[in-house]
Length: 94
Image 1 (tube, rainbow, N blue to C red):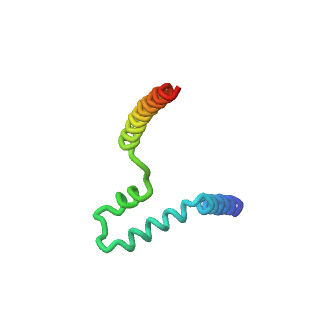
Image 2 (tube, rainbow, N blue to C red):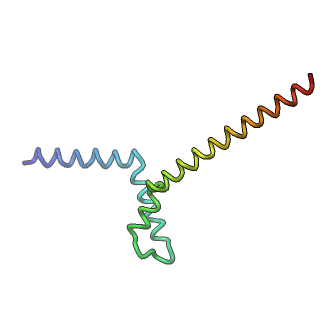
């Protein structure tokens, strides 16, 4: 029975070290301190924490991907127009 407890404690300690070394404990602490320091506490502490820890939602990510795609197309169009203008000007000097 003692060996089981020791193994369990060792696993807990290894997991705690993992959380600390990967920055999880620090990130959670910062979010909780931020929540504590809010003058007007949010109605949902869980939503506050999710908002502070989370990246974009799936729909936000998809929207950003679409925007990036549109901007790449626009960039390529502008680059092609610029290159064509440069070619025309270069021909004018020759």
